[in-house]
Length: 376
Image (cartoon, rainbow, N blue to C red; front, side, top):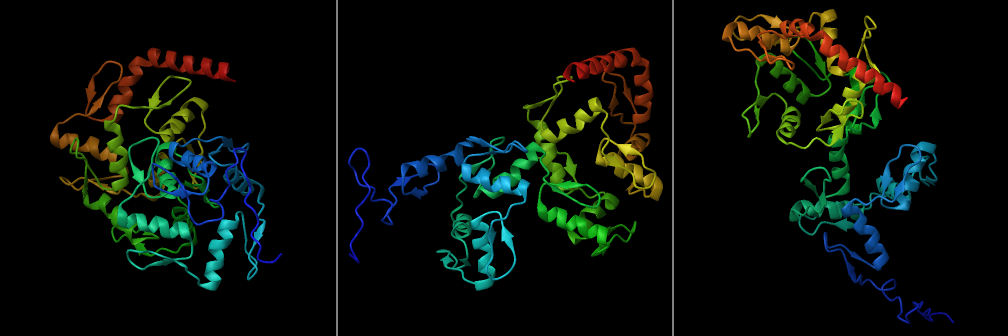
């Protein structure tokens, strides 16, 4: 009996399932060109392109296109790690992660790039790398037109739209969308500062962050918006600004019907209705709705004034105060009342003026409170 080939399993229509036994994969994805053994595998793969999600986590409501992906994700909530390395004590949520880890022990890299001879331990890593040579980007963001060579970078980019920040610092509660950003942030608590600003003494865990910070002193803004000409010190600030030129605002508040371009703006706005103030000053205990407001507030304790006028050298603890001050030199006024359209040179003058519309503002607050009661 040894050496005798096992007969092929027959389908209902009488055809034999030969694709499973041979290297040939007859089913090809029309979007990315990937081949599969069976039509069911191809159908499952297609969901990654159209973002179809049939399986949802009961804990965090995150959606998945495959049941296996949901099973692996659920283990992150339960803490279950059934796959253990035989060479060390490390355990993993998925068999795939164990396979990646094993390569660190064996050093085996069987997959080689046909363009540059670089080798990889994982086949998918090699495939993703080769897309850098071909320029292939089959994975498109569901919110914008940007495309990516792999699902990981698409998922990472999607957090810009959703505002999701799954990685949290255990020491201060600050959240991050990328794990490496959180790791760098944690070093700031340990006092492991690589670089220090020679003007204000502020320390940084990365030199790139110091260079960005120095622009608050020099006023340098190398990142220019092509649509309106406005300049920014940070590339990330320019990226957020560019979205303001678009008209779409998909994230809508259910209490006051105000809409936003990003989910993170909606979440911040909702705190106005709920009264939540999650950011607390560790010096005086005062709470704030936004982290930016906490940073500005802390300067009242430290005396830091990073924004300097280039005309008279006067310094300020926040950019808005510097902009208001500059109007004394230029005469240009930017602060306009939302109710009557009157323009003021200083933001504080605008705030005082708004009190003349107190009756109108009060009616908006009453409406919000009534809506909150209905929701509860």
